[in-house]
Length: 134
Image (tube, rainbow, N blue to C red; front, side, top):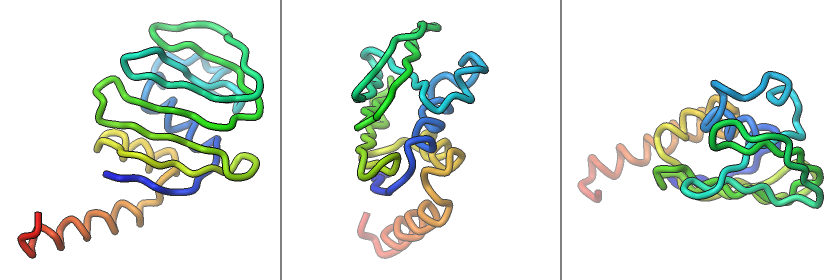
């Protein structure tokens, strides 16, 4: 599914945690809005910020403290999700790219995507299918 929505940095951070490391992120990191997961390929996750400090690595996830985040590149290990969050103003940004069904669930859970966005997409998909245009 193609994504193009405005959302806050915190909501996108929650999505990244849900999609990658929720089961093992240190609890203190979960509550700190300045701490983000990063990962090297395959499934690169990279935070572009004016200031970044490496904290620790747990499994394949490197946790960083980032200030003045300008953008985030999120690629899943499977390659089925490729999203970019770009700062628009302050902590508001635009998420664009493609997301797998699993990522869609986590985008909704993190409130990046409103349920109405997904419902509208499913209706459009159903309409295309019934008209034979797939």
